[in-house]
Image (cartoon, rainbow, N blue to C red; front, side, top):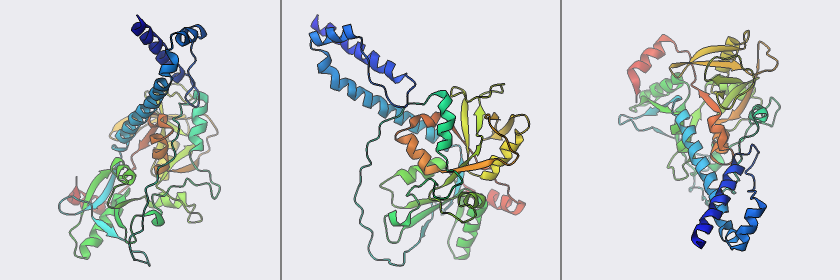
Length: 351
């Protein structure tokens, strides 16, 4: 009889925990148990026994949220193609960039990042505001910061670097230059997921750098006036959202909408202007037709472009804010190519 009483009390505690997770708050809510049930539990000595277990289950749910969100994120990133120089075996070609002081390797000591509590999805009315806060404003010194491209953080005094390219023309030019130097080089196709996984791998034997399109660097650094660490990604103000179907809705709906994040500011402006007059439109994205609309707000012909760091967004999703994985849509970069580059890529690309 006592065994079944323990089970009933534990199930009640778990139910209270699950209900607290469904509350639309910024962080995990504390469990609220019916006072009569709590008194009964204390009388039989059950709740004190399972307090730590309930807390551990809360941590487990947070861990599962992060794992699920990481998988969702990488499925999205795997749909965005980027390019890399490979050898005849299809392996990425390493580039070496020595420092002036090319002595011994830099000693590294493993550091454990501080544990962060997992935040819950904010109220629907606050989602758009928090999305905008993740992107830098036009003011100097407010750009998103990461250490992915900080040379002082690289593992070696002569770092081995794998160069990824958003612009296939830039990758093709690198291949031609290496061939002039006598190296066997080809254009390989990778994805944003490949780049992010390598950047997150603390045991990697080379350091990845993703070279954005030229207009992305120009916009992120404000024509070279300011620095920007990380890979710049962009959104418009007001934001563009990808919708499940064409509808007359105006406000953001987390059940059907996703904020569109661009690797090219020019793509963001073009998509914005395609819906400037009516507020909505359709476009090709990843080989399929999608519906999109501009969220409410002032709609000038030339929208303000906000920039953020791709690495910072991924870090947020995989640590404290996993809910963004289901609220973001990364748009593949649409880069216009001349006929010579198209012909070269048709002959050279290796998957």
